[in-house]
Picture (cartoon, rainbow over the protein chains, first blue to last red):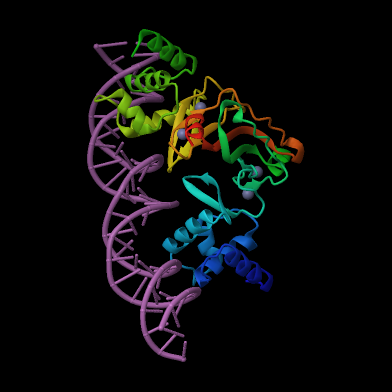
Length: 142
Length: 142
DNA sequence: TTTTTTCTTGCAACTCAGTTGCATTTAAGT
DNA sequence: ACTTAAATGCAACTGAGTTGCAAGAAAAAA
Ligand SMILES: [Zn+2]
Ligand SMILES: [Zn+2]
Ligand SMILES: [Zn+2]
Ligand SMILES: [Zn+2]
């Protein structure tokens, strides 16, 4: 893990008032350096041989989500993808696009969806937008 | 199952060129009369004692989704909710709102989300919008 | 620093929605 | 009625995520 990453991780944990442990640092480090949403298993793989137990990772994610430093971004094949929430506000997250051809999923940070459903009395606290179709690469080669 | 429902079910299967079987009719009937997304288990409950095997229901849903007469609306607690797709076009579906207080999920048929992501070369074939927050009832009593 | 308290971790066993293989039944075309 | 391709039921399986509990590690107190 790079020094810059290490520093950011420390800051994240400190500002969230969470205990600094090796497991949590490694997990946040993996997410920081990935620059994309990861499954629990992908987190393990990125940390490598000394990765924490899967239960520990799931419980860490739960803690991080409660502290609002991690989002459950989307579900694919019954498994959750997690990502750092530093690119979203609490209620306004970015859409995720999954390519039906090559299978990869991109974060569309630049695309924002206007949310105005309070008309009917609904109070939106969080939005999750999942888009499916062809990514730029696959739509060109088609 | 009401006569009207029976008739609609027959039409749905015929227009999709699918074999008319008791299992499929019962499943579509349940979805038609529910007027809301249902899980596999809820479908079984609504059909009752003589409901088809759960495997049959899952396989029927797969067939219906391929034939585009049913949508996988959203996931909640790792289980899929299915609904008839007669209120959506293929690429433009309606958002679903889950109340974090009372737990119920509503279809927001009237709310449409403008989708203009093709800017970056993405071709959107389907959208799934999940909203979370307080429903009208819960936001009033809060 | 040492002690005490509180939170975190690992392990094993479990849960449960959804899937797979295969034998049997049923719808539809002849 | 006969044939064929598709649909169904059952049992066994899969795999992401959870739970209980004992052991270990941070932070707080002494
Ligand atoms: Zn692609
Ligand atoms: Zn993202
Ligand atoms: Zn509510
Ligand atoms: Zn709906």
